[in-house]
Image 1: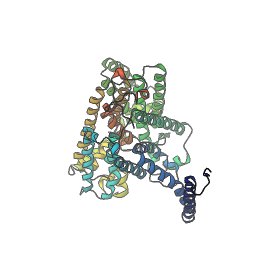
Image 2 (image 1 turned 90 degrees about the vertical axis):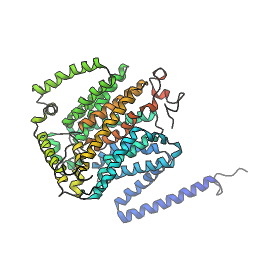
Image 3 (image 1 turned 180 degrees about the horizontal axis):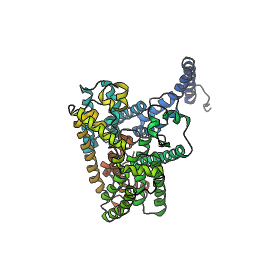
Length: 501
């Protein structure tokens, strides 16, 4: 007689008993947490199994951890809608740490030889310098080092290591691009909602905290910030997404995809406009000419300059469109010496120059901006707003640290230019042109805003810099390339081109 599936000796029955036992224990645990901690305990009970499943999936496939890090970087801005205080920044640290541990657990599948690349050497030198900065004797409160070293170098080192050694595929690159443009599209529409329909109560509450209202409501006009940390971050991301969409439209051969890219570019551009972030304009003003130089298409460069110069002159020497707030903000970006806030920045930099003359290694990481105000508000480094990513680095790591950082940035750009110029695959050329041009544009914007150290811009930088400096990994001769990258993903791959998971 066949054994019944309900027999106590069958494997299915054993699984049922196991799941019943686990379910019972979980129910008892939930009841205990709610009785002791109330609603917070209920939230913890809901999060616990999700967290456990996430840990298991990251350990099973480290690539999952890398893409979870990417998505969380965009989700972090939504935390202002949650009443429960959740340290999402530390959660992202945990995801990266688990991903790094998973790389070693799955070490046999990883391509460790890629760590010998010049890209990783540059990032490692900068990371090592920031580690040494933890011993800076000038730092008034050394534990603050941990909070700022994460966006300075730690996340770059960890994410860069993962992107290097993981067997990334063309499909993974497409996921990254679509995630970036998809989140940016959603962010643009949320910015439009803020601008034209009004703010949510949680957003209004955020504005009332600190100096947020002073910096985000100018002359009665809201600077939209969408679900990013502030309007500057939103504007920088929108300008970067605009640049990428424009480059895609230039590189597309088919009419329908070209029109879709142009529509996206217009959406992102207006998202940039409603942010009122003047410095974000330079993401496009620097990135697009750099893209044309990458293409070595000098006729188009001349055409582009011919079209751009009249627009710039129109903004500089006329009052056309001044009644529109967004147009006027763009105009003021081109005349900084007429802007009191820019003049104040220059005065602050002169004051910092006198202080920092005696500190070649800076005042210590974590002494300026928000961490300085939190842990050492009495210190001179915390009392002068840097208003710039590079000034922030200058304050905290000194002229030595700033020099190393700038050399790393220039080195990454030069490596990227060399590698992109060697590519044969048309689709890969398009993507890497966009990544490299956007990085240059964001680096230029860094002079006026600290966007290079904020989510999600820093996450995209940490990942795309590795991609465009090691883009040879996915290249195929143009004659072997297909218009659809997915169709070539697994066709006759070689060790140095397409890699399967």
